Length: 246
Image 1 (cartoon, one colour):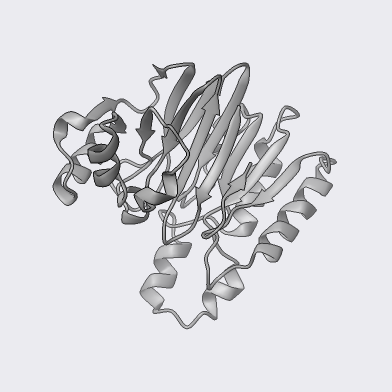
Image 2: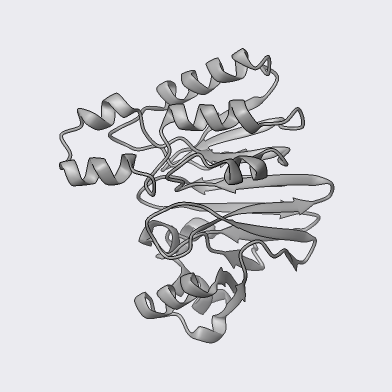
């Protein structure tokens, strides 16, 4: 399984998962031109925030491909964007479904929007965990991470940088709250508690431009992996502006 992050951050998110000549897209919060060279057959949507869905209307018009989302997310996108209802294939959280060679299992996550999800995607004996925009490191999310060979996990902010960022208190509270975003420390805690010996590749996602830095997030996670005796895990830090293969 090949996984490519096209963009990861508050200005746009998109990830391509490829296997055996097939490809699916997780979220489309990027311009259509960013998908040039990727022949995706379907799109999955984690939730309806703009940085995850703004590219979907053009994607559907240009490629006429199905968009997989749960009912509440699909309804939100239909009302907020110029996307017809019949573009969607609706799933139920917790229920697996097939797209080509991929088995996809959506799972609920805590975030401040309608019914957000993460995904476990299986193909060719490999399980990929995709979890961003997670407000709280819940055990239920960790149990999904425990199944992963490869994982993309949010590591959004450094708490000190967030508190001293000069942002409005209400925004700071939202980001640090139980339906906001994971801090570096929370991401590390989730990995330390739940990552299994099968995890071999890990990517840190959705880093805040102003309240985090790649070297800080990477340093925290490398220390956590070292504490676990897992220096063998390949660690990547995803970028808002650069394509990164996970």
